[in-house]
View 1 (cartoon, one colour):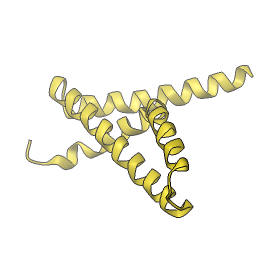
View 2: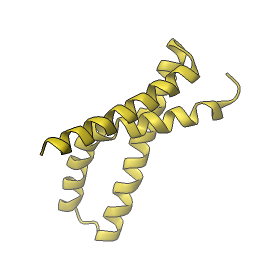
View 3: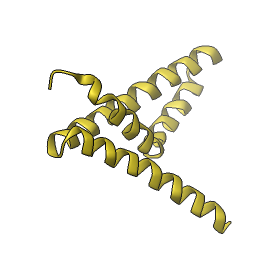
View 4: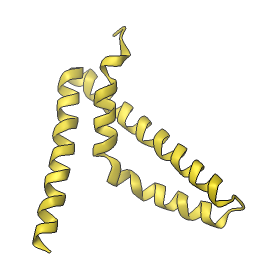
Length: 97
């Protein structure tokens, strides 16, 4: 695979689809940052950079693994289905409240 730009949409979709499971370790990291010596601005920057790196790494690994097993287009389609199903379940759970 010579052109990595074909994987970028799938990576973004998988990063978005896996946002909630990724928020647990990021919450612990945020709590650890709050106890540290950094100022508020630096804490926000550190949290933003770590969030983007973690989401990109997990989204990229998922996309690469599924692209290897299926194909890049199928892996991106599964990422889109994961995002849409998460949105559906979120809306459905709010309607029950």
